[in-house]
Image (cartoon, rainbow, N blue to C red; front, top):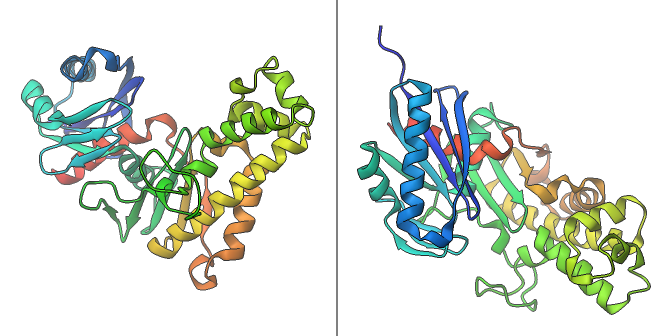
Length: 320
């Protein structure tokens, strides 16, 4: 009897690439992580991706039916071209076609947040639901939407860009070109910048924060702010309260658009805990339309750092 086909997935990030081979149930059979080394250019990065997949195929000893790739940026979903990815420094890179030629496999390229959303919905925290959204709060803020059991991709596979919802139309300019984006207020990067600004404006008030970084305000990150807030530092608690309220406003907009039953909230900054998540939930419930917010649960993800790679592999399985 022939062995059941399995699927490969690879999550391509700016610093590392993580590859997995999974079965149809999403069980990870083998996995490995390697540095991306973006400075070597797209051709070398893609060659390294192909070699990593070959290694895992050999390790698994299984018949791999397809490869899914999760990557940031705007994509052409027809042929898997990366139109633009700032974290990689890529413009119009034919990722899907090149990998398919290297490996002799069908290749599906998916936005990384969408892939993670699909993985969490299919075999993670969203399993058993029909309508859920996945939000990741880390260096930036991203998201993915599953509605009626289908991933909502949009024209360039970029649907669910929660980080670039405007929450203040008089706010600062975002690198994306918009103004007042949620990412400028509630991402890990934004939290760190708010801490640095507070320390520069009033070093005495921010004494606890400055002690954690040896007196250098520019070294303050969300990690130190979380640590200081936990110890009772009022400056850090205010920064996290403001960020949590901003995140709550963003989630209201997402729920009003997508009408989910579940919000899966992940990413490094989401682990800060009550000083951030308490104000987020309070703001969310205060502003959401009651009929849309009633019964919506906010939960943590289950797949961890492998969510994007697993999701990309399972999308390939679904499309075959």
